[in-house]
Length: 309
Image 1 (tube, rainbow, N blue to C red):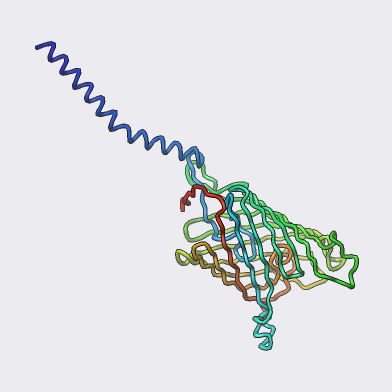
Image 2 (spheres, rainbow, N blue to C red; image 1 turned 90 degrees about the horizontal axis):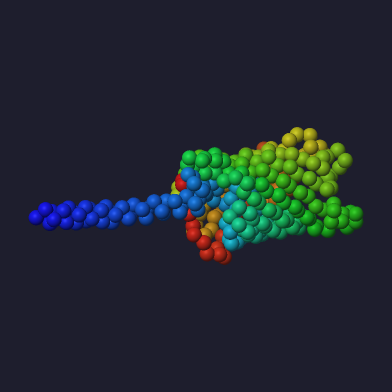
């Protein structure tokens, strides 16, 4: 009987041990899953995505860029000035256009090209995310991206035969600093450096500086209001009357498209045009109505991670 009692105790102990092991297996699997996710996103934090819905607030670049293997096609369209009168149907008879393609080489690095009708300009650009906003124990409060572009205008000037490729080129460098505060509100500030190889007169600066700010407020799940202001530092362009660019837009997301209705005093569609060469004045009706359309194409299959917001 004593031997039987000892064997019974052993069986009970072994059975309890197996039960504990079986009940602990799911917990172990969950732990491994958590560790795996931490390795993929960075221990203790996850990246904040969707700070803005498109690569531009209105004209101003955002920290957003196509992900690796994504191709983004953008159409920027502006009608004529509102104060052009009824004969021009208040600007609707006239139009300027830019077509752009941006491609994600990685989740941080993107390149792009474009062609606009303003001065028949070609442009190329590169954008790189230096820092990404995160949430968690190792928190990064903002997303920071570097942006650079070069533009080359090809409009013919028979009276200016000296305008070779050197004179027709301009360069822009920007530091994009943005924060998504919550699901509703995002904001961005952008210091810019511009260099024009040719300026209107000797009193104008070849090197110019500007500071921009913009934001986005969501009003529904698929709609938002955007606004931006681009401040060109004074006494840099003196031979012509230029204004600071102010623009507002209404974003409508429709699946793979982002459609934006806008009003702005800038006819130019790239950085070297709207930052340093805005000629429209809100005060006298020098306003352009227009729209932006952005369509994203996924060329490479990948795992999509949701934003923490």
